[in-house]
Image 1 (cartoon, rainbow, N blue to C red):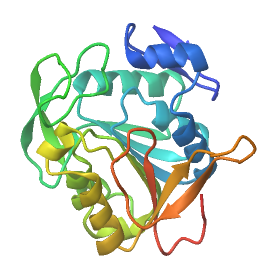
Image 2: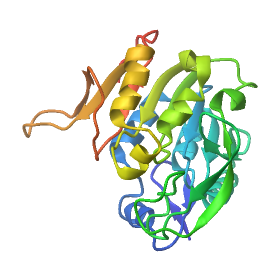
Image 3: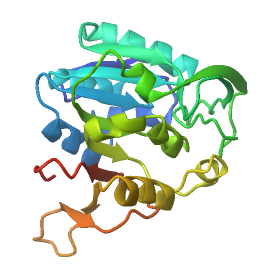
Length: 252
């Protein structure tokens, strides 16, 4: 089925999935992250959507005028994302690749998700009942970026436990990234792959001096929600962390 969004593009989605219910109700998804991406991305920027799923963020970035590299390991989601890019006439702005991002290039087993949780596929054994296994190619981000020598405005990363592997696969190109929006949740799949909120925090903050920002909900009725800088990232189940390159003066 194809559903409209309030952001100016439409999406083909799997009927019966969790995402469909949210999209039908709100015509959007993950309001905090979506609002942030819409504010950060500018015309002419280059962005990466790692774990692009059906292409929601890739289309949002393209709608904002950016060029986008979108990657997903799930072959079914890769095909849907490609369809959605073409559906919205973003082919000149978005490149969709089928691969699992990691710290090496080889073949790996990818565990498919269930129909309802169709965005939960993982290189680790799935946390929820899935739909079998497939072999997928793993790629290094630094290899995929060889044709792009400039800045990377935003790297959005939600790849179910392979986040730290993919970050290591960036190599020295991590210095070219202005903002990283990374999901940090310590659930079994992430820990089985060696990724954790503390590991991501240590890699980005201690090793590469990025600044971490966390979205804070208001404590009082008249307070405004805002992004607040924190010293480290910890596991959380609501919103992702934003990591800001120390060379960037902008703030969320």
